[in-house]
Image (cartoon, rainbow, N blue to C red; front, side):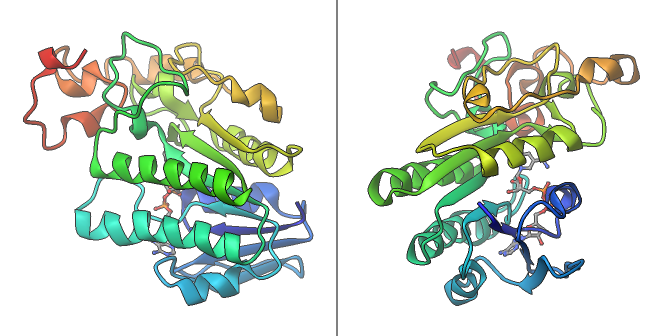
Length: 267
Ligand SMILES: NC(=O)c1ccc[n+]([C@@H]2O[C@H](COP(=O)([O-])OP(=O)(O)OC[C@H]3O[C@@H](n4cnc5c(N)ncnc54)[C@H](O)[C@@H]3O)[C@@H](O)[C@H]2O)c1
């Protein structure tokens, strides 16, 4: 994998990958609807809206591997989630297929399993349990990834990213945090791993309180180095009260948004 396209490259994770992967590949093409700056001859910056198939086709030209980050990174109105996350992700996989891209790395989210209880661990073999329209859009992305792997032979990795932050900001993130350097390492491993068909991985640091089983990490050689526990004192007490849906389920505050449910019915 020598020619890499990053969609959503102007965002938080995109900028971190840009810095962390600079100089590793023959080409790093950085695409976003916002401005991005390319540094040096091995980088290109392009304006590309993933809702626009024509722009995406141009962005894919000559690319071996796409890291697809573009979209709304939190809960939002359907009118924003549908075009940017669902149609944009469909367009990205379809443009990748049409242009002979070999691998797509999709920025999924832990919010695909948000309504599992925090008393249970979650692996990659549980049924989806999204906690938001945003989470549903990531379930869609994982499904379209599976389809394009099986039907069209693309190599696909779906990264269920936890909480990407400089440092954990509350008690939940002691379980869900992924540090910038572990995020870069995860994407590097997903780009460079020898041939695989379809993988789902959690994007999480080596947190002592991690609740997600991540068997595919070894498959691509991903060994996280940071541990949120080092910041436990800083965030002690920063947690919703027991009984609040934000405290009961893996998805945290997303589970409490617009909540009109009955927690007793969620096994
Ligand atoms: N940050 C986290 O903790 C986290 C956790 C789980 C998953 N993710 C996923 O990782 C990805 C990147 O997240 P982030 O935190 O860097 O978010 P971000 O908002 O900082 O970056 C997203 C980028 O996508 C761009 N974008 C939005 N719509 C677009 C479109 N239609 N066409 C092209 N570009 C578009 C934005 O301009 C932005 O630069 C997202 O898909 C997000 O859902 C992030």
